[in-house]
Length: 507
Image (cartoon, rainbow, N blue to C red):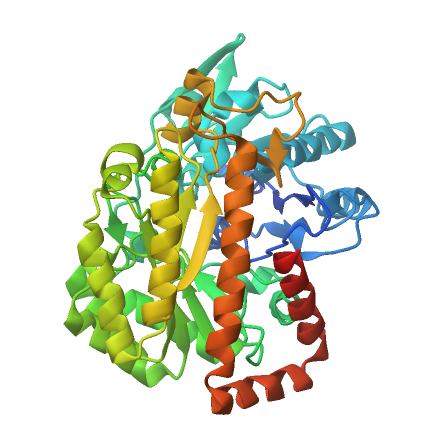
């Protein structure tokens, strides 16, 4: 047959891609479960669809049929059945928290047992910080370091013989036992990304989890459960907080969606899924004042509440911005004060936040009637017992004077953070084999200044004291109290959960 009469070769079919979030490890009785959308996988899935690949997206954390008391989520049987039905060439697994690393490894082991020919890829914050922990297991073929939307397309080209591993930014692999890592390339134009592929998930399942008190963010038990969803409108952080792991996955340079893109996204959530509450999960939602003010002005007519549960810097807020927040149906803003000691903020945490200015912002929120809460962290190496007391005193004082709801946490040395490295090098981590080395999956910290037990006791004592103050503030406003009690009567399950939480706090 003449060469010009030959049938054209068929283009290779796109690889079948299966995206998986594994189930969660349950560390103790009463372990707080928080199940939100796997936003990273949803974004990667949307980019794949945009490029002609329709992936399967399976969120094991959204189920509750595991027979293992130490797991929350889908059973391994269900996960394996979903993989067999999809018949993928590539499985991408996300690992969001270092405490959950063993679940990602177990998922990879089971997938390789089903079919050793499946390429298994790991991504997420932990893989970005420590890709060797996964690749060294022999269960993963590749690791994504940083943002995954563009890297996954390069990986598909590699599987089709159109790219080499050493040409793909943000990729890690092993070559004859040696770890290779290509530096990531940050996505510059976030507006070019499509909206996450929400349609690949059963969103009603997440709304139901939220109604049951298992949503990504704790809901006020006195209020009607809302249809809530999270979104991230910016990436990267130029600050250097010692406990934060964001730099490994998103970098230090701040990049953001335009106000117009954000407002279209929110409008899409409201119209397509009847969302009533949006959680802006950015690490720096208010970093650019002009951008956030434009967003706030556009939110007002969208008939949706919003909050900032991941925390914002108080020094990015001025009165004009606070007024716009008040006018735009804000449910609550959460500021991250972290410590009651300026020295700890500057020298231990590295936040470089003017504490006096942050307190003034809390006062202004109170004057404007703007609901506000704040993050604090105790138990950091380099912190003294006196400075820990200063933090707890500040949290109580702001709660009492300005109604600032306190969220006090014990320092969590996440792998891949400067805090973990400092604890590891300084011998501040309670040895893994000793009792009390892990608390709800968190490595316990001790120093010459305090023991892990000292911090646990200070934490419990503060929450007992705060619970009593909350109760007193509650009964001082009988009209508001009656309104909230009506909600509890309408949702008896929430009433029982609240009673259990109070009893645990006072125990």
